[in-house]
Amino acid sequence: MNEKHEASVKLWFDGGCRPNPGAMETAVVLRGIADIRRGLGHGGNEQAEWLALLHALEVAAANGLRDIILIGDSLSVIRQATRKQSSRSAEAKECRERFKQSAARFDRVRLRHTMRAHNLAGIALERARWMQQGA
Image 1 (cartoon, rainbow, N blue to C red):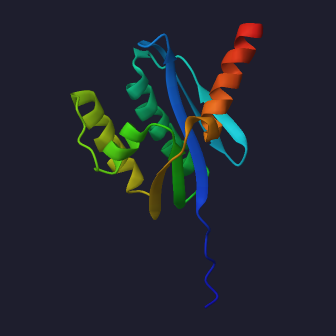
Image 2 (cartoon, rainbow, N blue to C red):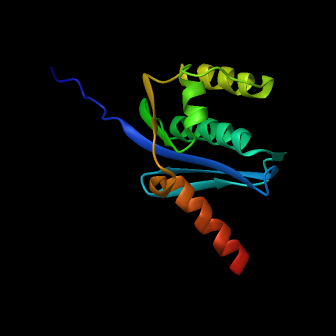
């Protein structure tokens, strides 16, 4: 009974573009630190949300995490990733497959929906946009 039990670690993710469709960007927040990616090409909000979910898996893997909870505000992407909703486009199906393959590398992956106002990654992304405009 001396096994070390790793607690689940929460990562918040968000993706967006302005205008929609437009230039995509993503953010992932882990332990209070935001990792923001810009220049991800041209696309719509749902595509940006998928990229953010995949970004969260990359951040988790880079930090050696094994048991993760991914928290986002895109109910559609979360429902597609958990197969509670079918993916409509070929692009979404491809992202779902990439998610499935990447998630298989972890011991445990859970997805949770949160309201936009409570999404730390969304807040970080909005703050970064605001700071960029002020620069």
